[in-house]
Length: 362
Ligand code: IPM
Ligand code: MG
Image (cartoon, rainbow, N blue to C red; front, side):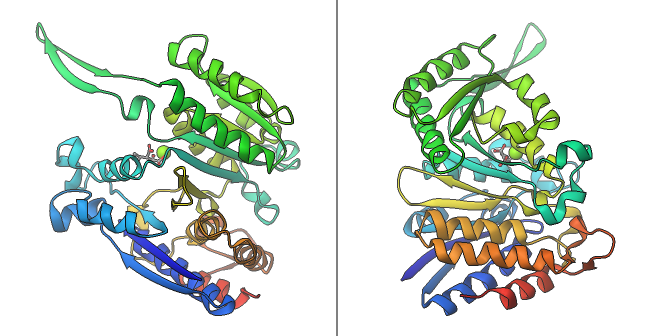
């Protein structure tokens, strides 16, 4: 089949990791007889440097014209990069928020898996990590605090900042449905995370999630307060299957969950709308400190490309093959520096890409 993929190499390590993901996708195409048409667009700092804005309308149009978007990472060092001298709506992150909104990518899937081969990297006590874990955070991505009205004012000489957290029931319902649908394909458990003991938006969240749950009698639902969830993630991560939560809680909890795996360089993500279209990106950031050194871990981006094959193109066998290649390379003891451990062989970003291409079989 023909796969139209728009790529956003972005900033920092973004271009290096996207390059490796393309190598792997090209090998998939060659093995399975597909044709990939790539188009690169600028976003984040890379776009600011050329166009003065983090995302142009043309770039959005190019993204919309594709079947799926593969992204590296955007942003720079917030203390030293000139991008952060710009007004907030012109900084790199604004580009990412805008493209999510423009493409209506309301569902953000962030798996956090403890790889058997990397169990040593898990920072938790051995008796906890021994149980392993495999959870998926379903984060609402286009509503809530990150998209509400905000302003900074001065009243009687006192500076005051206001951010608004709004959700309507439709926004909650559609993400809840995505959460239950995916739970059905996994271990059939949804933990809905909120702060219903304080926030109205959370009380509505809980009520709507309860309504949606009625259509999924085969899926177990539990509610958990976000502060407790933060604690449970380090105490007993194995209890979680699908964590369903709003934008900001999902932002924070997904970073925590990825750290608990000990290998954030391994974690992929997908941002989906109501069609097969999606934007796929690693869960990690742009790591400007190691950019251009060919030492970044490309695996999260490569696994994001596998998610793309699975969710946007229904190419499950191809996605399985990519995931199997990752497992094989890890089993053979190859590691990038972020996941290096004793007795393993340290390889560069590009070498990791080459190894994965070699290990990819039909
Ligand atoms: C993420 C990032 C973004 C977010 C930032 C860069 C706006 O932290 O994808 O988790 O908060 O959504
Ligand atoms: Mg984040």
